[in-house]
Image 1: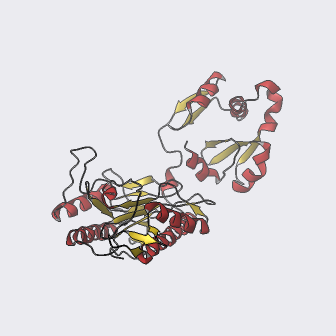
Image 2: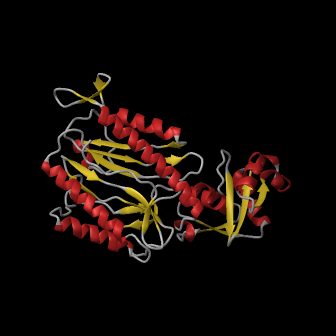
Image 3: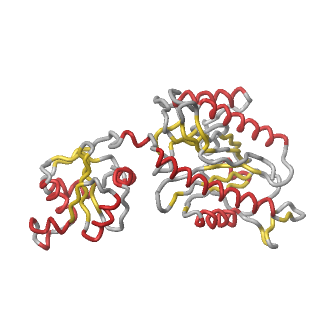
Length: 361
């Protein structure tokens, strides 16, 4: 199973290796003696075993982790284990050498992980509030910048760059016990590529796509927010694109409720954009235009997890936490994306944190 499946099941993070064996609702944990107290606190219901307890079955020179795991599995009375698609191949081969029958399972080990508990929603809200605070700091920095005669934004006499905005974002996130990698501050044409992180100086009249997705360093849960802004005069074309994206997001948000099929939201947004005169063109790699990604994705211990608001079967349920982030992209010119993270409720959905949507600063 993946690292975050283990964290979900045990709430345990540790610098030393540890292994989880899940049998129905029972959790078995194998940890070093150094991590035993931490494991007991994080997962009190688990049946705990330390590597020191296995010493009698292994000569000192042969106490590799794989051998200890094999002895542990046999002590528990099992000769076969199922592992997920991301389980490392090296330990698989080592366990097989020790006589353990290892099978690959592509089924999710914890199917209910997509349904967030009230505790998890609170932790996600905490991360989303940090994302909002960082967005506020970033936009305030852009709003207060001086403007040179040539339209370049300045801060304390120096060019205001994507890199500096990212520093402001990170400084704010650290104050909220969060960190982020891959933060996007994409300027002008850079914004036409949805995952372009961005670089260089900001100028007036250019759309800037700012996508912040922090992870809380304590809980491990993520937040995710995107805003697109322009400092100074905005062309009628970009105003129209922004209004269209905002309208698409409103439509998608109105559809997010229990029982709605994932792909119904995706198809509704695709239809909305096409009717507004923005068809999607995926024919030329690297020059895709229009609405070129899914409406949203699940958020939890992974920044991208189930469920996804995309062209796939499945239905929204109470407790799902998803982003809603339609966008339009013009190759070589720029893009607009607006994103919020919501939890599905009995009657619809609720924003985890509220922040205004405004194009012009």
